[in-house]
Length: 468
Image (cartoon, rainbow, N blue to C red; front, top):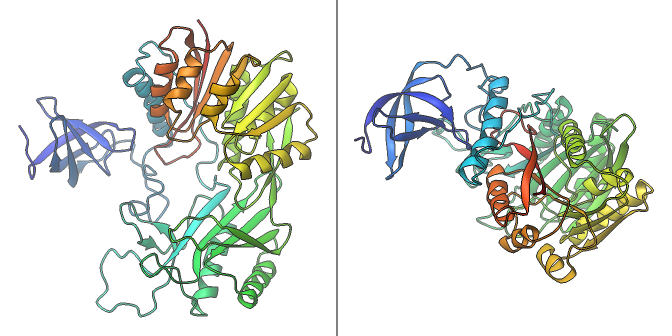
């Protein structure tokens, strides 16, 4: 039996849901290894041994997988973003489909569930409409420099497993060339003026985050600089330079956050030029197009093109008709409720975030919709106190952590015609569905995974439950 420190040659047979290579010893013992792909043959060094599995590092890849491709990004393997960018994209789709199937079988106990192939993304690069870059004085170096920079200044993305270390990103293939240009300009602008960066150690410093948002269908662009305090002269100079150099930018905002922790969220927003928000349109069919206002703090699906496919698939699977009264739980800024409004009798969206409800009301007015209402409330308390008798279909789109067991319990005893569960985490989705279906009132009717984030191990999934 293997032990910590052993080096062993193994063939990688598949990927785990976290993107780690999976191999098995002759005895059938499972070994996980990062930076390996199915089809690789590698020498692995056991660094951690558990009763049921081991974790290993790669000593040498003896034979490369036929599905290995050259990663486009020079930061691949260091940055925490595109962990499987070196894996053939069609194999990525196959992998993500299997992640959903495995979760439903292993966690949910749905052994007969048929999972169709995940919907692939046409644009596997430059697909994001939002990027969040951090400022830091702690730059990641592959080889430590003998003489340290007296005034370190980094603007980029985080290194996995390091709290403060950043890669000083010069080019990222996730958003756009415009985004890269704004990123590099911002770095040089503040670095040349010796402007300090915020440190969680000293709880001081000026610069915190740079957030760039781009709408794909309306071509609006927002630059949102998050700082510890407001400097009127400096911000006017910065926004003036952005407006002059990047005419595509439609608004610049300075969000101010004095929170001690590094969270890219401002308590106050100063609009430096433009409206302070951007708009985006979502098209779910040739006849259906809705407009949404996106403010600095608004949540919006990060991949616009795939969001259109996601919501189109959800609407088709849900079989909405004009007699339906729909409950939209975790409605956020009202995207789903607004998109389905023309297909149903009425919708009630429920969400705990007051700011999200404010955005939802604005979006409803923007689209001149009269059959959608929103309520700011705790989902569990709403279900337990108000009940669900007035609605024949329900949509749930919870955060990655999934549903509260109490909510699953209420849904399991409910009498909806359909329960539509949209999830960004197939594992918590499978866990919740096991509870909802345990009473025997519901069965899985249809499933559709969607690849929202190429080159990552994340996958979105839609499941529709029908009454048994």
